Length: 191
Image (cartoon, rainbow, N blue to C red; front, side, top):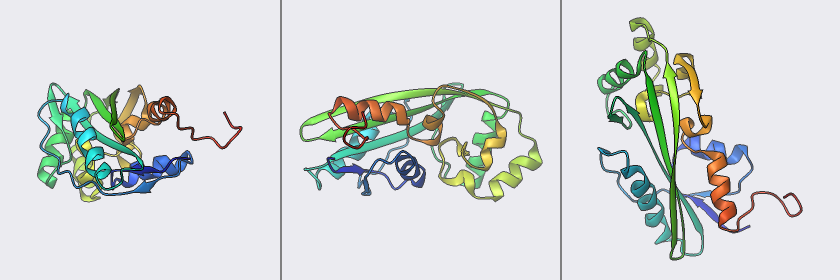
C-alpha cells in the first residue's frame, strides 16, 4: 500500500483511521489555521494543511482535514477559553446545527477536496450540566466545544448524516476518495 500521511495531530482522526485498519503516519502540518469566517473555507484549509506536509513528503499521499460547526449562520471552531466554550454550547443548546468537515488528498500535482455535512440536534443543556461539562476540559479542543464520541454525547438527541463526520473524519467519504485515487484499504483479495 502507498504511504499515507495524516496531516493532523487530532487524536480523534488518528483513532478513526486505526479503527478501520488504514495504515498511516501522522505528521503535523506547519500550516497555521486562520479564524474561519466562511464555511466554504474548510476545503481550502484542509488542502493547505495537506500541502504543507506534502512539501516535506513528496512521495506520499497526504490526508488533510478541517471541521467547523455552523449554527444559525454562526461558525464555531475550537474555543480559545472556557468562556468561549460556554458561549458556543449555549448557542447550540436546544438547537439544530451543521457539522462540516472537509477532507483533502494531495499526491504529486494532484489535489482533491470534498466536504461532508451532518445535521445534529442538541437537547437543551441545563446550567449545572454546562458548568460540569466545561470543567472536564473536553470542550477545549473540539469544534463547537463538544465531543459526540465523549461526554458530550449526552447532549446529542439525533444525528442525520455521517456520525464519523461529527467526530472529525467522514470515513466512508475518505475511503471512497482513496479508492478513486487507486488506493485500497483492504488486503490483497479483500475487495
